[in-house]
Length: 116
Length: 113
Image 1 (cartoon, rainbow over the protein chains, first blue to last red):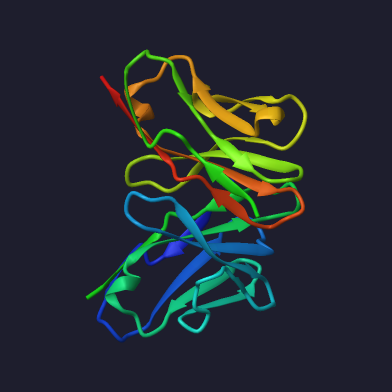
Image 2 (tube, one colour):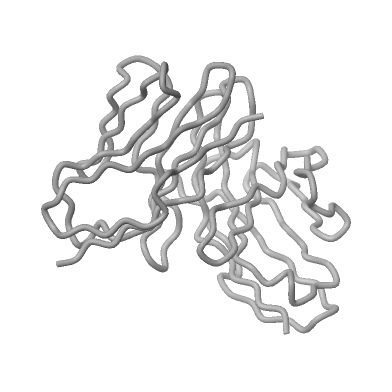
């Protein structure tokens, strides 16, 4: 099946710094990528939808200036958490879809962000 | 707007017991339905999906789910669980004309050996 990778898998940063998380589709072209946030023992919450070559669409309540998303190519999307604070600590998961409307989403392994 | 509810938050079963996890969704149009599994320390994996056709869908590892349109349900079943089925299970729905996958709250299954 299709593979989606994320890098890094785990990152610790100091409050006030920025962190970039990469999401790559390894063996297919993803016109659409999704970024989710998962709090401990909770479900995934969609943060934003990213289409290659265009601006991301953010869900209500997600600050687009804080969570910068760039989908520069058909195999790479990045999420940058700017001026991170401890409340941004979470598990961030990306997924990628290869075709629409019947394409399923393939999930990355997630990135655990801890802000100290 | 679409929403998904999973009724059971925690389920504990003994090996060989039968499993049924409930999933109900709210959406006014045609939907695509999914069940995902997240094993401890691993990422989400697709168990099965329903797009159209036979409402009884068979997935990997002996799981199946039945789409009942009149009840807006897509319950997950397995006749005999194994210890290795211990994981968290998520039901998800994607409105056919839409882009967004909405997840239920998840059900944490523990299978006792």
